[in-house]
Picture 1 (tube, rainbow, N blue to C red):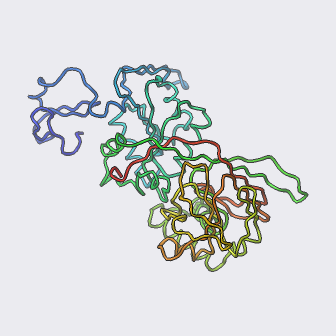
Picture 2: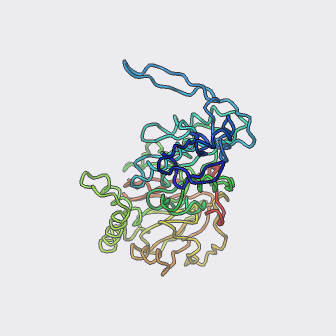
Picture 3: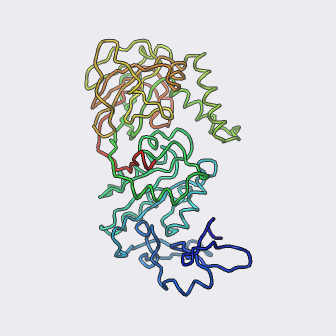
Length: 422
């Protein structure tokens, strides 16, 4: 099927009209009428987006038997096509993401790129998908588009780090699902809309994008036993934010509901309704009341005196809870400590804020209140004295007593769009 409003590349008249046979190239997607076909070149030039394409003649496959009746192909080498510039693009996503939008994104990009460059994470792990990048000749500066939420982007960034890829490919985001705080900060928007944004527009934006750096933070969680003995350290990575308290409790309640067998509706409107319901519930129950008595907070080794609060938020980017710029909204600490430095995502510092209640969060989201700035630091330690809900980049759980240490590791390469390309 031809793309909508396809025009003949020769005469520029409309194609795909009744009783007329037209041709379309599977690679450059140019269309021509039968009568115009002799006037175009015999060899495809891969079109205006060829800098993102790995042509089929540059891929060597190895086929192995997978069971009695099936064979499975693996890419073993990729050759340089000789184009300048050449920045091969890999699109990674889950077809189940975004109420079906993930499937639409993957199928659309399979038409524009080599289908092997588009990987469904429902079928393959990021390690398998990123095997492409390790095979690309060193001249090719690989780019990655993560079709999904912030969790998908973090998953891919973690995989790049664990695979020790050098040079590390830069990652852009096609935002699906809810939240999408990292996508907002990088200029990719709050939500992909297939009705108003085409794959061609995404590739045009990608052409104008710039490489930026995003601090990668190590989160070490050392559980504490009753007898003061410590267990093995559990390590995680953080790119967006970490929080302990009421907002993590709301995220945990939502997560548990979504994992339940009774969860049968996955629309964005219903998900927002659930968040509102759980937020209202916490405003009444206040399970995280007196959090200041259940934790100890240290910024660069100095203990911070906490007022009555229900949440502590550690920020790496200027977006939280679907677009709230907490640091910009916040006021200085009640002890007079100045927190006037601007927030940056690549300065090896993180910002620490305090929230008073679930109702306080609701007011923040409509700009009617301000959080409490606790400070900026290169290292943050939080000692949990009791079992407390916490989350890292949208992944919530109930954490037993532990010492939590956040330390800067390095920087990830990400793709940022300017305001004009957003």
